[in-house]
Each structure stands twice: as C-alpha cells, then as structure tokens.
Image (cartoon, rainbow, N blue to C red; front, top):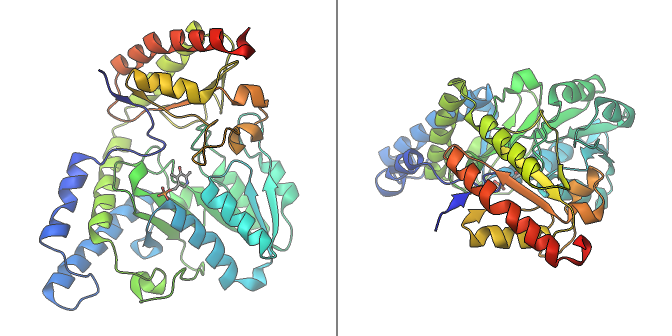
Length: 385
Ligand SMILES: *Cc1c(COP(=O)(O)O)cnc(C)c1O
C-alpha cells in the first residue's frame, strides 16, 4: 500500500543528513559541553558552531539564541519569564484567539495569577488585524504574543506591523514562529520582534530541541533552577546531539529557501484546485494567498473530520483535522471557531500539510481517493441527507 505523509505541520521526519550529523555526538563526542576536558571542549565547540548556524537562519546574533527543549518551552519561557523579570512594564498581556496552546494556555495561566489578558479576535481568514491590536493596547501592556503562522489553517500574520504597534506603546513583542522557521524566510530584524520561538522537529530536525531568540537588551529569566547553562537562562545539561541536528536542519533549510524554487506552492494549488473541482460544499480555511507553502486546509460540510482521517489512513494517507484534538474531545478546534466557522462546518475539517518529499503523484493519488471518501461519508451521515 502507498504511504503518503501529509502532516508536516505536526512533525517532520529527521533528514538523513541531520541524523548522520547527530550520531557522532552520541557515540564519540559525548562530553558534557560544560566540562573542562577535551571531550567537553569538543562538545562545547559543536554547541557554539550550532548556535551560529541557527542564528544565521533567523538573522540573529549567536548570543541572542538560547537552546530549549522545543517550541513549547520557548513559548513558556518567553512569556512567563519576561513578565516576571520586568514587573514595572505593566500587568497586561495581549495574545490572539488562534495561538497554539503553548501560548494560549500560558497566557490563561498568567491570567489566573492576576495578569490582565486580552485575547484578540481574528478575521475570517485568521488574520489579526493591526487595528484590533491598536485598539486593545494600553499603557500597562507589557507583552504582545502573536504567532507568525498558524499551524492549523496556515495563515501568515502581519508580524512586522503588529510588532511596530506594540513597540509604539512600549510593549515587548513575542512571536511563535515554529511553523515558519525553515519554511519561509524569517528574519528577526526585518520582523522587528524581541522574542521568537522555533522548534527543530518542524524543519526536519529532531524532536525535543528548539530555541528562543532574545533580542539584545531584552531581559528574560531562567525557567528552571539549576546550573548556569545557556548564559544562566536555561539550566540543564545541553542536548548537544539535538542541537547539532537542529543546526544541520537549519543549514539545509537555508539552502532550500535560497534556491528560490517554490514546488510546494504549486503542489498545494494543484491539491486545493482538485479538491474544489471534485467535492461540492467545501470551504477553504485560512487565507487564500498569505499562507504557509504546502498547507491545504479545508472543511467539508456534513462530515466528521475524524472519519475522514480514518478512511484516508486506510488508503495510506496521513493527514490531520482541526476537529479532533489530542484530548480526544470532539469539539472543533479553537482556531476554526475563531475564524467564525459554524460548528457543523468546523467538524468536517481536514488539514494536509506537505513537505519537501511530497510529489505530484502523491497529490493525484489523494485526488483519486478523497472524493469518494467524502461522498460515502455524506451518504452515511444524517447531516448529509
Ligand atoms: C509544534 C508547535 C509548537 C510546539 O513545539 P514543540 O517543539 O513540539 O514543543 C508550538 N507552536 C506551534 C505553532 C507549533 O506548530
């Protein structure tokens, strides 16, 4: 049976070259990067070279990068420790209704601790409109956190404008760029952000490693108590093999980004057009143009996303749906509700996120398999009658 992976927004496979770059740091150069002896010094050099490579991908300086255990930790650390370290900046925080839970739940946690929280609405494309932020910002706003691109619907946010608005009001700006780093050019200076989170496993690197970019002059704190690793900002023995893998993945992403080819955009268009041509009562979710390359997200009326996923999986196609979440609840995702989809439509959501190894044949196979699946599910559904 065919096996087609189209869930790259959830995670990506580790690139063979990334894996090979990591192996020696498990087997030969296994020293603790804090140790004084030669083993430790070799690991330390690898760590610092990796920091340069990851910084280069983001247009940052190496000393502005802190390695973390992933995107979730970077989001938590950015938001929680910035507020803890800068109590005089105010106690109001702003985020958006479509953030990843690593940001949204962190902000909700802080609201329970006494911070004032504003959750900005988005328009029907999932964009945070700059005026919405302008109206919500206050003199006591300490931090604004808006994601660079959404993981479910692919919409890319106008970060540059949003960050400028935050800065005019004296607030610091954090962006969760886990979905964009490695997929589109991300430059911290151009975006004008103070804090940015990234994760290796979304760009063909290993799971369990990511980074937080902290602009020079922005004060954050350590999230855990322990040793003085990462300039006292991230205690714990550094995952050197993971970091080396992250750096290799970053280097390869840079090469892909500079090759100027946009094969994924073409594949996504082929898939989207094919779906709309073959399946009636379908809606595109997210912005039609300002979206992640390779991201196709749609909703089919009268069907259940979960059932589509199971039927697709029977045909070797791996995708995901915003209508089923990790908790196993059948509530549609907060993102689909935030863009104003009615519950019935949001239930039939399907997300196909392509990666560099997907082909035109993959797309054509999906276009052969998907329409009859939807048709059959609609025949069986009481909603489809
Ligand atoms: C995957 C993802 C995260 C979480 O990153 P981890 O490294 O898995 O913790 C955070 N934000 C977004 C937008 C993501 O897609």
